[in-house]
Length: 199
Image 1 (tube, rainbow, N blue to C red):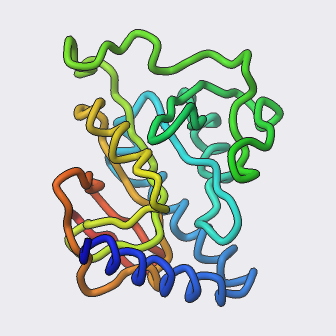
Image 2 (image 1 turned 90 degrees about the vertical axis):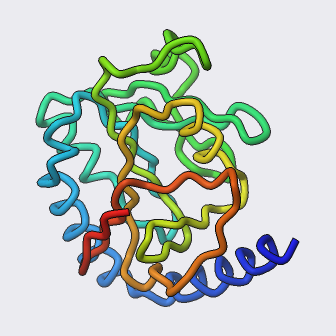
Image 3 (image 1 turned 180 degrees about the vertical axis):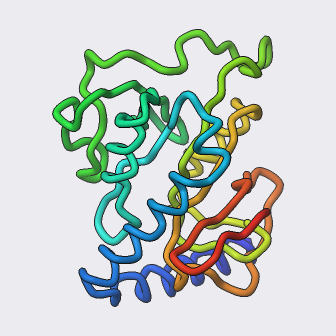
């Protein structure tokens, strides 16, 4: 229980710090992070970008999604489908999104599922060049991550171990140390407006 309590404390502290960023700081930081991600070798390598749709004070992903379309990549975004469960669905415009869980934009029902052909534990997706852009509330320099408490990305990425992972965060979201639990999934890189941490 101690780890859970500590994670909650870190999450609350970092979310308060992030909320204090001005709109200009968030906009400028998001722009720099977008530039860094779209020039990263993993982004160049990927055919498909599975990306969270930013909400509130998160690093904005709207320009990142637009650039993915502009470079001919398929884009999929997540939809919550139950406790700890989410799936990704392809979109080709922001018009395919509507407010879903907690008011976060999610794909509409008629969008194409991106995970339809994947059968957990039976096959791997080694032929698919997928890069997942992960959100989070706090990270340390080793890539340990605290999400929002739902465990959605930990569960999803455990089922898709061949997908590459980059987390987008502001520098103020980087902390000295995050307690680790067995089910936690780390990104391969954490990219902020100031640093790129290889995990």
